[in-house]
Image 1 (cartoon, rainbow, N blue to C red):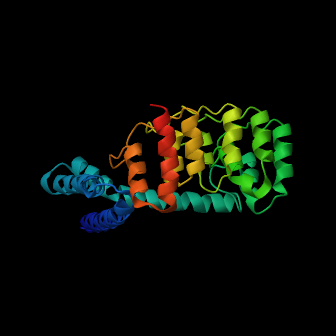
Image 2 (cartoon, rainbow, N blue to C red):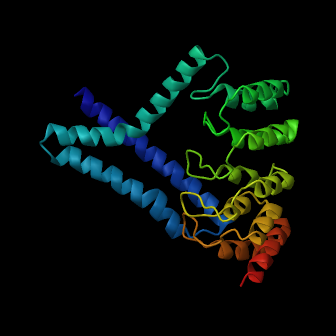
Image 3 (cartoon, one colour):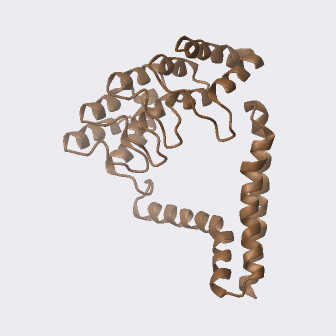
Length: 272
């Protein structure tokens, strides 16, 4: 009886989460000119069908193993949240102020924002043989890119000098130099990475080039530079929109975003 109540509780929680994500997706679709039908398919129909399949399996089968599978399916999102919370609590108790999975080097790089004095620690660790490519909570090069606006380029240059690979992929399958396409990152950082071995034609696991990330952040200068360097602009968004079509939509909307998108479109046209 208790398992049955838990099953339907998880079903209710999953349904509420699907509905919330769907509503947020529809709200974002307008500004990104994404087709509502694509949003409905990806955020409502597919997860809804999976939830319905789990309910059907739980109600129709007599096999305890199949019922257990259905229970595991509906409880998976909640279980993932609980496991993540427990991991965070364990990290906090065993490594005060730290983050789960970090290394000494990634912690020092992460703390540069609030404590520029950690730059000395970064120098010491690298001089002592710390691996500049060993991932912690993030890759060291990604953290150094984010730290540039707080402490300058020295940590980034130190890592590159020690052999950090700007094309190494992070846990999400993105080359770490993609972090330099963010709107808060100075264009000089991206130029440095390209000059130091970042492959402008590299793609993330989803097949997108770095220009996609720059456009998503409205970083038009970075997007323009990448297109000039040969960055691929093919592929489609998760909602099925090609990059050029997205840019054309921004141009039609006008304003600062439209002006920036127009400069990137012009560079794409030069390549044809």
